[in-house]
View: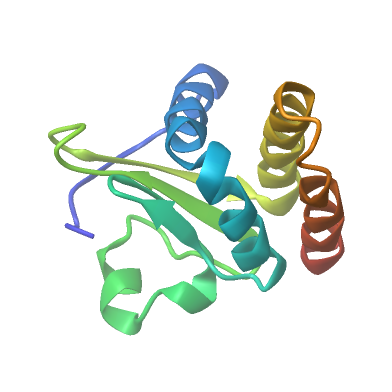
Length: 129
């Protein structure tokens, strides 16, 4: 985390950010990501990350333009994809909706990945949505 951020707040910008996130974690990383989210732990690959409050230390929290609380997930797209780190604060329901959409697409493309549906249900329980 750099301390210099562009906060994405429009649905269009958040959709683009989440598309980038899922482009990196769909496939072989999605299962691992869902397991992490079920434990309310963040997960990312290379330039995109999802953070829960417990993932950040005091220094990281101080760098954010606003605090991350226990009801939100921070999505971050960093360098070298963008000059200024792009972030979005998503409430758990919104974050879950993106997960649900992408898990359904993954299972549709790879019907043998039935375990993803069970993991998604664990995430839903953990996030209380």
